[in-house]
Length: 210
Ligand code: NHR
Ligand code: GAR
Image (cartoon, rainbow, N blue to C red; front, side, top):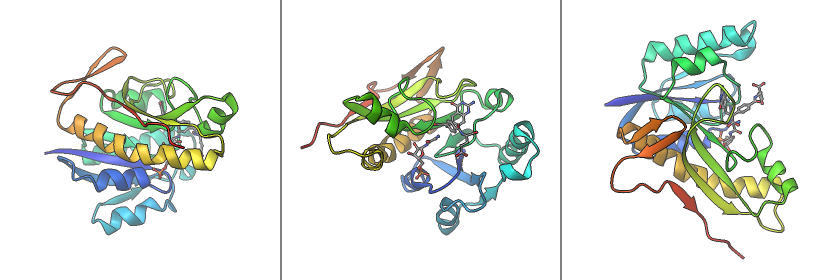
């Protein structure tokens, strides 16, 4: 059976959705760069090993990346899942896990890379916003796209209400994408991802409400 590790920095609701999805693989550990990440307690409660690699305990980004890679390599996972992981990773780290490192980003990439995506979407006046699961490449939020979900932006939205609507979809598409990977159904070809099998449509469109 394939194994995976989940990297978190905080709340960990995407991690919860993945651990609750009864996937065809084993979670070898949840790793956090913050000792106080709320998600660690949930993982421990599920009997999943937890590891902290505190970025503040390392002199620079390279040293943190090396410690993180050492913690991951001890577990020899097939897949590394970034789920609300908030540290930018260096080129060496990303290349080490090339083709087996996934992230969920809270926007319809390539729109709104980086942080505070929901406020940026409101400021831009877009009518659709959403989330993207992608393979991680050295350049931030630019990797090959596995699946996206779009939600409407409503007139009364604040960054928080919009984030909550997007988060519901994250909890559906991220376990789905991890399942596809564990089933060996994802094939990377340059900047494109192909889903092998009976279904090849990996976008989700949520109908407007109100
Ligand atoms: N690393 C690489 N090389 N490529 C990607 O695509 C990555 C990545 C590391 C994390 C997640 C990402 C997101 O989905 C991710 C994708 C953190 C920041 C950031 O600026 C930006 C994007 C993402 C994660 N972090 C600050 C930093 O200085 C710290 C912010 C904080 O601690 O709150 O690293 O959006
Ligand atoms: C999620 O919305 C995720 O997409 C986003 O942070 C939230 C984490 O929530 N990720 C990033 O912004 C990465 N920079 P969670 O901890 O409850 O899964």
